[in-house]
Each structure stands twice: as structure tokens, then as C-alpha cells.
Image 1 (cartoon, rainbow, N blue to C red):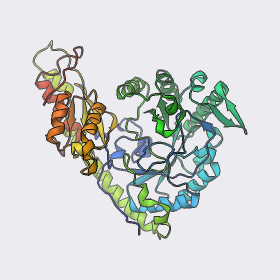
Image 2 (cartoon, rainbow, N blue to C red; image 1 turned 180 degrees about the vertical axis):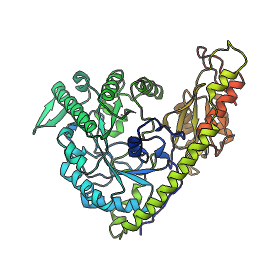
Image 3 (cartoon, rainbow, N blue to C red; image 1 turned 90 degrees about the vertical axis):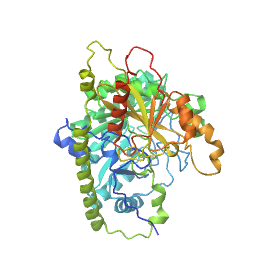
Image 4 (cartoon, rainbow, N blue to C red; image 1 turned 90 degrees about the horizontal axis):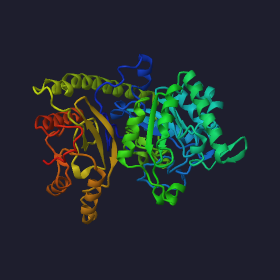
Length: 500
């Protein structure tokens, strides 16, 4: 029997990513309503709301050097990976089961394992049924954009208000290095010509969606040495055409995934390279930094996957009273909104401006303080509540005299498992410390003696004094402590590594 788990507390399950302030306040009310409970389009929403993907689209009409859909591991978080290919009827049944069991699930997306719009009949039939049977769920789709211009009207027919287009380039010469071929008008086209057609179709689709009032998120894969500098131009172009959000993601190119890039030794970007490019693009448009590059059958909060709870064999004989489920969902989501409102108000009152503190200092000629990267261990909900050794990822925040901002998430191997793998703990701890390169503080609920010493030796200060506090408040408090201690005196000096 399927066990239905109702999680009503806010959080990102295995992860969260800060941002308790209302970052949507500057948007028109109509747009705020569209993104308020969409965990991919709103950084704050993903603390509280879940998403799911259904894998109904097996075929793809282009080939990317970073993609291989033949591989599947239950522990992978990688686009295109699925465990079960579903028919539209099976997908609808699964969505109803998940929505009844996880009332904070607000968004259903179709993202693969191929391209949803290269499988229009299967994709649109799934949307048609869900628009009728689950009208309280937002529907969205991710696509490479090749078939998009011809299907905009059909997508809008089912009230799809969010579309993601993967746009890795706007220059065919760059595109020829990423896409070996496309399948277009019943023939395979290669090289620069293929990239030229794909780029033209992507831009046409983007323009049509924006004209229809659809919010468009642009995904771009950062490929060092191929499109890294070029993505600044991509960001400028898509913003000018009305894209709502830009998500620059790191290339995943491990050889075991069997991709062309992986087998040819193409490296992925470092955390510093990814942050630098995201910051450069942020000058042109809003950036998504909380993406987890989800599987094409992911279920749950961002950063977790509960898909194995809802396999076909577990939901096959379920009888779902969706009318009752909708009532329960509405109640739970109303509670979430009340809690969010309270958190926003609390943060607004509690978070003292770091810039005002800096201005209040008595020394008028004191150099401007430098920013500091801090890593946070959290299970979600925007609070520091995880043991260092239990973290599978750390959230990275940058604190400065102006503000606290979320930078991204860095995945790590589990350091403390309490099992026979504990003999490998030292190696895993070293890997974790390498993953935290550039960070000067780690905030966590608890930490053991051994990792404490190793972190200090690496110049990273462990801090367990802010357990169960809101992340941004705690990061700001630690920054103020460092500021008052005179340890952040110059932005030009070599950053001083911190000790406890």
C-alpha cells in the first residue's frame, strides 16, 4: 500500500536555499501571482512548495554533446534521467496520486526524457487531461525550442503560463560546437546550418510566448571554453526579448554518463567560474541560482526526489478522491502562505542593514569591508538545522556591507553515514573541504571534533552558534561579528582566512 506523507512544514527537504525577504515585491501583481508558488520561478517559493515531472516524451529532435538519456541511476540528479516512461494516462494517475499525498505540490512539468515538443501528441494529451482533472495545479514545459513556434497556441490553450527554453548560444559558430545535429522537416541537418536553424526557432518561440503573456525561463549550460564568455550575450539577447529569468547551469560531464563531452574530457566549470558568470549575466536580467538540475521524473521539493514512493506498481490500484484532495491542498497552501507572510515580516523587522552599520562606524576614512562567502548546512525551511556530517550539499551565501545574497548550492558526498562506509570518512571530509573552497565560514547545527579541526586547518571557521536561526539573519550576524572584530578591513587586500 502506498504510504502517503503530508509534509506541511516549509523546506527544501534535503536542501534549502535562503531568501526569506520578499524578492517579488517589485513585480506587477499579475506576475507575482504567477510565480508566487512556483518553486522554479521563485527562489522563496521553493522553500515551501514542491514540483514534479512526468516522463512522457521519449523522443528528441536534436543531439547535444552534453546529453545521454540511456543512463539511469536512482541517485542521479541529472536532466533526461528517468526510471519509468509513462503514457499520458499513467502520468495523469501519478500526478493525482502525488498531489493528494503532497499537498504543497503546486507545479507539474514535462521535461523529458527527450524533448516534450518533439512528442506533441503525448505531451498535449497529458496537459489536456490535467487541465480538466487537476485545475489547481500549474502546468509547465521545458523544451529545446526547435518545435516551439508551431505549438505556442496549443500550449496556451491549456493555460500553460511557464515555459523553459534551453538556449546555449545565439551564435551558430558556437552552436556548432554544442549540437552535432538536429532533425528538422523530416531530415537530419548537421553543423553550423543546424545550429542556425535551432537558434532562429528558439528566438521565434521566445518572442511568441512573451507576446502571449507566458513567463519564459531560459536555461543555459555553461561549457568552459565553448560558450562561457558568449553566455553574457545570450543573457542580453533573451532579456531584450522579454525572458523572465535566466538559469545558467554547470555542465555535467562525468565520463560514466557516456556523453560526448564526458568521453572527450570536457571539464565542467568550477564553482567560482559559475558564480562569476552568473554575476556577470545578472547585470542584464534576473538570475536563477537555486536550480538542482532535476531528473525528468523528479518528485518533491527541490533538492529531494520522492519518485520511488510513486512508482506505477504502487499507484496502480489507488482510488483517489481528488475533490477532497483539492480541499486539503487549499487548506495546506493557505497555511503556507500565512507562514510565509509572517516570515517575511519577521525578516523585514529583524534584519538590520549591514550598510547602515558600516556608515555608523566612527572612523570616516576606514576602507570598505570585503564580502565573505559562507556555507550553510540546512534541511530546508530557510533555517540552519543540519549536522555538518549529515549534509549532502551546502548552500553558499555571500555577505557584504550591502546585503546577504544566495550564491548557489554545492553538492558533497555524505561525510557521516554511521555505516560500514565510515572508514572512508576522512577521504570524504577532504572532498567536502575542497568543495567549500572560497568559503570562510561554515554554519551548521552541530559539528564533530574531527571535522572542526580539519576545517580550521583549511582556513574555514566552523560555527554552530546559530542553530535553528533563519539563514540570512545568521549570516548577517556572523558578518557583523567579523566586521566589528576588524577582520574585513579591505576589499583590495588578500582575504584573510578565518579561524574559529
